[in-house]
Length: 131
Image (cartoon, rainbow, N blue to C red; front, side):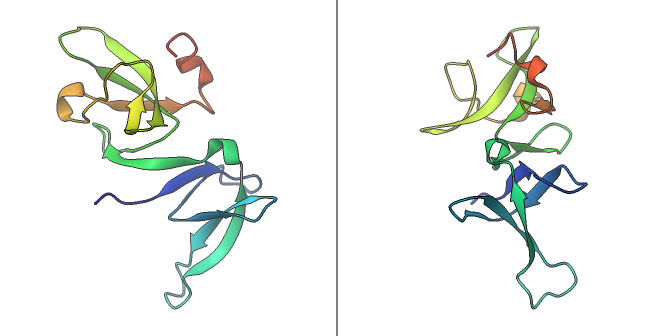
């Protein structure tokens, strides 16, 4: 069973990216629930408003550098017998997580040499010609 986690940009605050195991929508804002590190008796220490367009789920896989891959990340990888590296966005589809613009789901194995090189929010130029 894969770990359920989310990542999103904060609407305010000095830390632009937040990570959480849960979020909710109150009819006006999307909120991340931030766990308490100081008091284990308190499940959640704070809630922080997030930019909903940047909300992405952890796909349950890490890249070749052990970096967690989230929906909205841009990855570079080798595919099949091709010598060149491909660049594409990770997105959710009806059958699971896909690499946009490819006809089959990549089976996230080491043979694809997957590496996170950015995300579509901070680095849209990475996928401009690839999506």
